[in-house]
Image 1 (tube, rainbow, N blue to C red):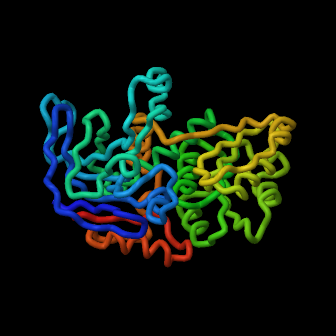
Image 2 (image 1 turned 180 degrees about the vertical axis):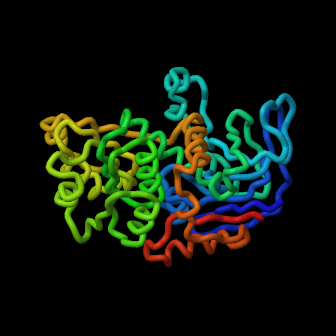
Length: 340
């Protein structure tokens, strides 16, 4: 079978390797779709701090079960599935206290261990998440980033009836906005500096959009929500500028959730946080339950995933996907790799 290997930044080679055999309690997946995410792009540019080369990418994945190993129950050949890409130790404090997504030795497939950028992929059955036939292969491959959004909104501790601001209208920000709406938020305002992404967010259900290169965030929040401002702000960029925006525009007593992954050490005004008694929270990845909740939202037509796919490439043109992203001028959301 063919396997795509990123041998170094900006280079992908295809190698012929043996098709894996599912071991005990494993499932062999015929890979059908692979989504490209922001972290993958960091690896492509050689800027991911926790990934070395060579590496097989692929952690946003859907496929069809080809075989199951001995003792596998509840998953059958022909099922459409995705999977949670975390590899955990099972023995550290987080793992033994219901927080395995924070494992002290956490590895993620496609970064610290091989991912599914290959025609077949064997994975532990306990990580496999079945999706109903009403959920397409494209949508199934987007359950992973949707689960990020589900967990982020969960961290807000109930957004029903609340006003929500999402900073960043990329894939994660768009999905966070959608999950907030599905969870009962009264209204969602989403920001970006690329109008194309804001238009996509509007089409996917965001109530208000603002290009913060044109209009400052503070007045935009007041225009949308009135003097009382936002109840919850979710930062989905991981940049110093948007982190500052999140903190400095937060209403006293409100909640700020850091979703974006900061690539450098950032500076935060803790005096302002203390004075405003802000609840500032982090959020990392997800657990399997968040995958299942994301599947349920998609199956209930409460999320718009297909509309977010802006580019697609055959597996043989994997490298072209990255070049398209570089040349897009920010006019992209989800780039999908097809293995049909």
